[in-house]
Length: 283
Image 1 (tube, rainbow, N blue to C red):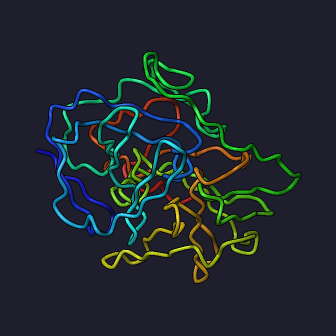
Image 2 (cartoon, rainbow, N blue to C red):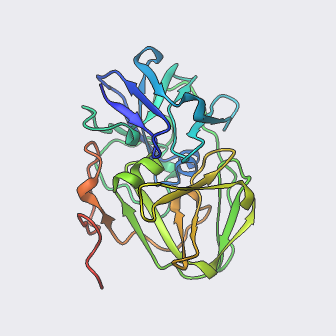
C-alpha cells in the first residue's frame, strides 16, 4: 500500500493499488501549479484514498468553475484533490513512495507543452483531454513576449516577476527533494544572476520554505494558489526559477538530467540529453 507525503512531511496519505490510470499532463495550469515541465497523476476512487495526517494543512485554490488545486500550506507540494469530472481523487505520482506498479500511459494536453520541453518518448499523445473525457479545456491568457524580458507568474496571478539578462544554466533535476517539492517526475530549473531578477507584484504573497534537514534546499510558492515560484538566494547571488512558472520562452534549454540515480522508479528518461547520476563533473 503506497504511502505519500509532501516535501516537509506535514501531509501524509495512502492509496490502495492496483493503479490503472497514470498520465502526464502538459496543460499550462498544471505547469504553473507544479512549476514543472508537466505533472504526472494517478487516479483512485475516494474509497481507496486515506489521509494519514496533516489534512488541516491542505490549502485549496479554485482554479476554475469546476476544478480546484490543493497544496501543502507549509512547503507548497501539490496535494491530492478530488476531480469532479471523474469522481476520483487525483494524486501527484511523485509524492507517492516506491514502485507504484504502473507507468505513464499517455500525454494529455500535449498541444500546450512548454516550448522549452521536448516530448521524446513513444507514449500516445492527446492534444487536450483524452477521447471520452467529459470536460472542456480552459485556456490561460497568453503573454505577449517583450524583447529582452522574461516574465513569469503564479496560477492565480497574485505574484509576477520579470528577468532581464542571460540565464546561467538550466537542468532537469531528478533528486528526491526536487520531485517532492515540485510534485513532478523532475524539476526543470533555470538559474539567473540575482541582479537580473525582480518581483513586479505580490512579493509579500511568496512563501519561502527551507527544508530543516538540508543545508540549502527549499521551495518558494504562492500563499494563495500554491504555485511554484522563484527562490532568491542572496548569499549565493542567484535566483532559481522553476521553469513551469514562466509565461514566455526563456530562450534556453535544459543542459541535461542530474541526479538520475535518484529518479522515480516509474519514470523513463528518453531523448539525447546527457545524464548524470548526481551533479555533472566540474567544468
